[in-house]
Image (cartoon, rainbow, N blue to C red; front, side, top):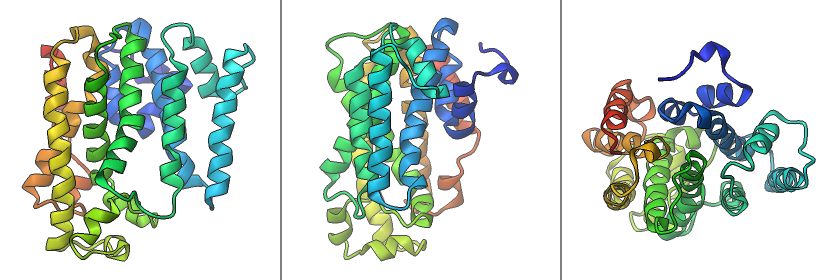
Length: 282
């Protein structure tokens, strides 16, 4: 399968520590493509961390602009001295699409906003630009990109992103952040402070359930669409398997986002993903 983690590259180590689901998924990709995938996922980690590491939105916008300029430098043949930038530069001519990376950067402005997304459709758009664009880029890096798979990546991105956001409700609350749509909260007579309190009730569970049901719709469509992809592309879409398991865990625990099993999922997720990778179906 994969080489020992003791000789990981800088990007590989970043992904291993911060994005274990995608690290695990990458182990099933062709060996020659793994470093490019590690570079992509490390890039995503850098973008995701921006909101966590700045004290005000303006500083976050400056950091996102730094990454836009870093991509410009790669295109101009003068990459900045930074582990992730240099890794992206190495992968640049092997399937990197600037439009997808730009979309991933642009989407992170949502993270910097002081208020939650307004609607569930706004949150879905965020998922398409983050997880969706990332999976489309991952398939391209593996060398399996096709022109007619746009809807697949849209649905896959929404499913994976919504599941990730639901699983992270408690950790976001600890940071003073809420990503549940405002309309979803207001329709259940909830306020942002109710989510930040970190205690569940029936109205919170109903709000979580409504987002989870939307994720399930996209998951079903994504899995159906993924059947047309060759087995080699499965590692790029394997996060769908983790998302499916997380939805089951949420349902079993009454859609309580603060439940330990939701926040800290067990190793059985990897067993399921291992089986999915083996049979070549996400």
